[in-house]
Structure formats: structure tokens, C-alpha cells
Image (cartoon, rainbow, N blue to C red; front, side, top):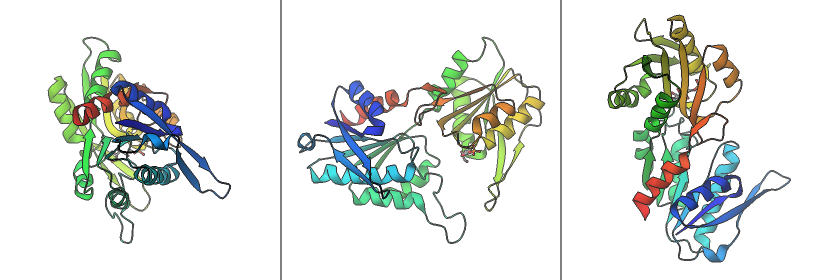
Length: 299
Ligand code: R5P
């Protein structure tokens, strides 16, 4: 078995190879003046009759990187790869998992259809928006790991003072079940908010389920922070209620736009998450957890 990754994900791919004690082969990428891209396996002779773990970060430059992913798979197949296990820490288009408005494309299904066409054997990924929907679309094996628990444990152990009153916060109903399970497992109380998004303007309206939330540390946990809009609205409410410290925790820290500024201005004290997307706030190394899962499933 060989681990491979395009050059922009070389560090992560190399870490996975080290954890699993496997050889690493880089895939070189380039961009032509007209904007087209090209993937080229650096040592194609190494691929023949090997099972391959292809590791790739598809953020930033998502659309370009998806093309490079498809090209990498095409080349790996051409050069005789046996099984291909794809590792995408942050699955692109996982939020466009239904046609929200009439006429829209179903991006996630299209992506899984393309991967199916290129005969991916297994997709390993981390905390997707909806596990159920992804599993309905993908006709290949899908293995989704969750970093909610390691992230929450690390926050509680390293950011919250000893004997403080802590509360876990699900930012919307979509995250209620995982946060509820986590709260039970870690013996910490929880609360949640309801969120409505205007499908035309993208504007959100947030409401707390408990009118008063009192805590030393309120720990919001979500799958991702994109513009920071959701968590900053919640942080304002929590701070108004007298919560002393507000922690914005998410697995995928996209942090687009002015997200960081928006979060701090709303009263967030700490931003934390994993490195499924490269960012300065990561306290969880996703490659380690992915490697543990790959070892369990493949070796
Ligand atoms: C959507 O429901 C997700 O779980 C997140 O709550 C959402 O993507 C966060 O986006 P933003 O940071 O832009 O509010």
C-alpha cells in the first residue's frame, strides 16, 4: 500500500504515510496560463498493483482542486492502482446536499457520481454536514470519523479552568444530537439554539431554547465556521446572559470573509478547531485520527 497526495497536500499525506509506516509518492500539479490544471504522478512505476491511499485537501481553491482530484484518480487508475481509498478531511459541497431552491444543481450528488465513475473504493472524511444524505448518494464505502469528542475534551481540559461551570452549546438543531450525546458522555450540561436561514438572502435568525444560559464557559461546537455569522449571533446572546467566556469550536475552520473579526467583536474569547483546513487556531491534528481509522479499516 502506498500513500499519495498532490503537492499542496504533501505535508498531510506525508504525516499519514508516517503514521502508517507506508511509502509516500507525491503528485505534482501545475496550472497553465489559460487556467487549466494538470496532475502528474511523480513516480508512476510505483503505482502498479498497489492499493493507494490518496490524501487531498480540497480547500481553498475548491473547484480547481476537485479537478486535480479527478485527474489524480484517472492517472492512478491508468498506472495500475488496485484499490483507491480517498481521504478528504473536509468534504467539498457537503452543504449543497439538496436542491434548496427550484432549479439548483445537486452538487454533492454530482461529486459522488464522479467519484463512483472513477471507481473510488472508500471515501474517508471528517464530520460532514449530513451523514445520512452523503450515504444515500455514495454508492461506494464511506467512512466518516467524528472529531467532536476529541475537540470538546481538549477544550474542557486545556481552555476551561478547573471546577468552572461549563455548558456545551449546539448552534442549531442540526448539531443538537451530536452535542447531546457528547454532553452525556462528558457529564456536561448542554443547550441549543434554533436557526432559520433565508434561502434568498442567506440571512440567519437565531433563537435560544433556554432564555437564560449561565456559565463560566459556554462551548459552542459545530461542524464548521464559515462566515462566523451563526456563532457571532449566539455569542452576543450568551454574553448578554452573563456567560463569562465564550468558545467557538468547530471541526472545519473555513473562516472566510471577516469571520475572525466578526467572532471576536461579538464576544467570542477563543476560536478553536481542527486542521482539516489549514488555519492558525487548530488544536486537533486530523491526520492522526484519520490514520487510526485507516489502520483499523485497511491494514
Ligand atoms: C450549517 O448549518 C453549519 O452547520 C454551520 O452552522 C454553518 O455552516 C456556519 O456558517 P457561518 O459560519 O457562515 O454562519
